Length: 481
Image 1 (tube, helix red, strand yellow):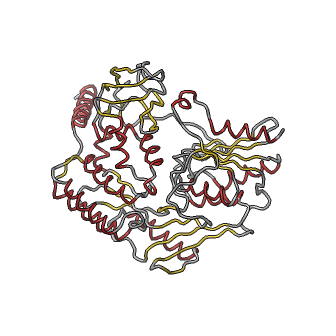
Image 2 (spheres, rainbow, N blue to C red):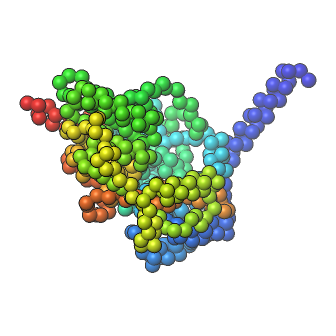
Image 3 (cartoon, rainbow, N blue to C red):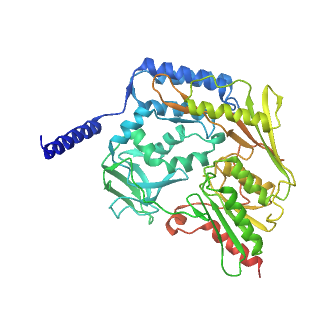
């Protein structure tokens, strides 16, 4: 057989495999398997989640459990089953507790082409507002209000997403922010994929408009992104700059506390701040979903005007459920490390750990003692809300923006091993520790509230103005007069 014939056979086989993959639908599970998985989840969730009864009583959990069981009464595609689990888990009111698809479902999903929803949105006052048009139709402009999509009412869509979106203390602000940021995925999960979307809208001028909009292209889930070279002060999740001119201001923007060389970044940034006698520091935490508490607390050590501490608490039992080996190993390593270095004490039938930064731990030579502005929004979560709380109460920073997604008193996180459900093989991410912000504040089940609250509306979306930065620059310039 010639080389040419081998090539033809190879491509024919590849094409056949791809066609079959396109036709393959999501896995469908029977009622018995889904029911057994859900019973397993409920049993071990009650045993393991440290905040299971903070917002929902034992009696209510039994009602939620029974009502959820009734919904598992017919065979379901995995995506529909996961929606039921998400609604159930949302009752914990913990932003770190999540459902993750099985490896099999992910493989099926990644092999198929997908008709992505061709626009991005924000949820503002129970309205869906377009923030970015990814189609070829110029009728859909930024700031347009969507009243319905393919006959699905906008408010009903938002309510469906809010119902399954996990959020600390059930904060509607977090539900709206993260629900909108994942809108394309959520919409497809609830209503399926379409190559054409029929929209009823209200334009920025108040006119009613109805039209069809097509997806720009049938996209595969895997998209290659161009490689970008980053440096210490301009990396994927962080940037630092000192503003030229007479403002004497430094700006540190952190999108997530999974930084490359965080210690070196802070050290060099605050070294430059000290050398150039910077008077004002802006810390931008908007859209920061959290990350390493060590990186977060290290940042606080450069700006806190006083000593500070934070704590963890966990139950005495180990994991009672099946978890992937790497996840389980990480959990037990973290337990051992906390037992060795965490100043462990036992009360309320829990192990409690405290970590403190005394005066020797604060960065004396490079400590910043000037005026601090900290920008937050409804996406500032987990370690970012920790920094916001300590910046406000310990560094005396002026907070500007919107209420954080993470609660001011702490959250449930730190180590979050996956529970593997025995039949559907989906995963559930369950935090094993309560993370406590040790601050002289009352736990009001709210996020960190800014000193100066700003409002995001369709005018700010249309203009593209940075309202928070504009307010800060105005304050700095007025202070220098």
